[in-house]
Length: 485
Image (cartoon, rainbow, N blue to C red):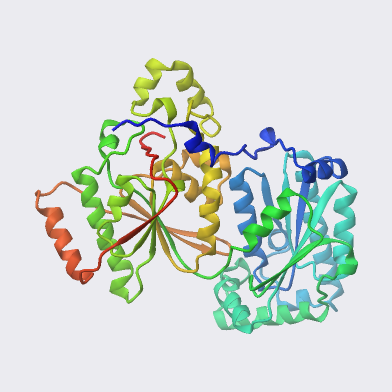
């Protein structure tokens, strides 16, 4: 069950953590950026009319960068308005001819900008996202001069939407969830919000080259992306992410594999198979997927697993395409594989102590850290963001923690301690103002030995004899376990 692991098997995925205390770079872009902007701070200034997906995009970017270890925060002017002057402001408040409302909105915007600058300069922030309409040249000029005067690099990110169906969808699905319209009937809310949009359209000016600024334009939620004067490593990372992300509705299902032999023995490492209880979970998971999809006339989801037996065998009763990612394999425990935590404590007390002190950055000798796992998962996350359909990911404790943390917007240091129990399906549906989460615990209590066989026969009838297919991405050599990782 135990295996030999060479460091090269893992090194292909390893990169330095991006947290502020571990940033090192030899790239000329980074050096040049450091000379011009010694604080290495970045402000992403959102631009665009309401209902164009700005807040959704801003939150997605913050989620991505925080997960990678860049301390990022969204400063939303709308939240300042709701807190300081109240959420229930009618459309007239946003009329450019309403001098009182215009002055109030300006003061709120300045207050929000001041707070973002203070956070970037004095509270160890690295990337601030200024989420407001910023839809006039005059406003953008002021914001740019303020930020660059503080040695903060500025990147404008404009969301333009010319597709009326997308705007209508955003109004119905996103804006009606806003606190502004909690106590208003949907028809009146839509009417008021459309008047608000019309008020902003009167003075709207799209960003142009003559503003002498770096900018990205996202048109119709990513159908077209325009780039202008981008510099630096981080801005390049953002482009890669923005080219893959979308705001279309879909659900992502996460679960660990069924109980394995090493779960019972509380061992690290190896490639054990499922226990009888784990096999019952595999059958229950197939039944759950049937009720969630085929019974409702939906196509089965795409399934991703690791290349380890306990992960692949957990989905063996679901007859759909299964992509087996090496990058979804469990964290490599190095010299500690095949051992329990008590074994590690007795044999390697320094390793045990270091792990307990800093679970995020601790790297098993000859193995990986949680930061390494997050770094090798990044291409998987970009592919997940690109997909438009629902997906079921069946993997391991450390890996599911990292993916779950990404989807719910947790910082990198929070991921190692997230609660992800066995035999629970986590259904996540991304929204503009958060991620809706439903947890379903599937019952796998012991029953007679013939239970699994009869259950499988029933599922075979349900799925009309379809056969699952598996495609492997990467080497099949590695095998890791996940109990206590």
